[in-house]
Length: 152
Length: 152
Image 1 (cartoon, rainbow over the protein chains, first blue to last red):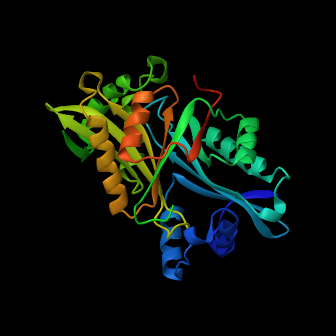
Image 2: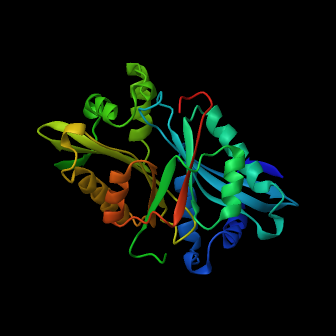
C-alpha cells in the first residue's frame, strides 16, 4: 500500500470509502459545490492533512490528522487523528496499522508533541491495533457531544 | 466572566494560566520569537479558536477549539476541544462549565457536527462537569501517544 496526501482529483474516490466507516444515515449526499467548499478549506489549511492508502489503484485506507499549535510542551502543537478507515475487503492485513504509523511519523517530523484519537467503545479490534502501535488507552477518557441537529 | 476570542496582546496573560493546567516540566519557557510564530499560525487559521474567560481584568479560564472540515455528516466538520483550564483560585464556581458551553454554542453556530475531547482518567471532577454539560463518556475511548522526544 502506498500512503500519500490526498490530491483534489481523488476526493471522488475517498468519499465512497467512508461507507466503510460510518452508517448510511451519517453520510448524506453532498452537492459538488459543498464538496468543493470542504476541499478548499482543507487544502489551504496547513494544520490539516488528509492521508490515503492506495492499493490496486484504489483508495483502501484513509485518515485525517489535524495539528493545533499550542503554547505547551515547546509549542509545536498537538495532533488529533480522525476518520481512520480501511476498506472492508482489505481489513486484517495491517493496512490500518501502516497508515496510522505513517501519520505518526509525519506528526513527529512536524515536532508534534502528542497525537490523540477517540475510538468507538465496542471496537475492540481497533483498540488492540492502537495499543500495539503504542497508544495509551488508560491515561485519558474520551468524551463526545453531538450537535442536536445530528443523528447520533 | 466574559468569554472572548483571545487577542494578540493577551497571549502574555494566557501563558501563565497554563501553569494551572499542566506540570512545570511540560511548560518550557518559549522565546518571544517562538510565541509569535505560534500565534501567527493560530491567528491566520480559520479552523482554530483560542477562547479566554476574563474576570477581575484577569484571564481565569481558557480552551482551544479546532474544527476540521470533513465529508461526513453533511460536511461542516468535527470539533476537538483541548487545554481546558480554569485558574486554581476560581475553580468550583461554574467557570469551566460556562466556557465549555460557550464554545459548544460557537461550534453549533458553525454547524459543527460533534465536539470531542480527552480528559485525564483520574480527573473525576472534570468528568462530572462534562457529563453535566451533555458529553457522553461511554461511547468512545480515548487514546494518546506522545512523541518519544517528550516527557509524558
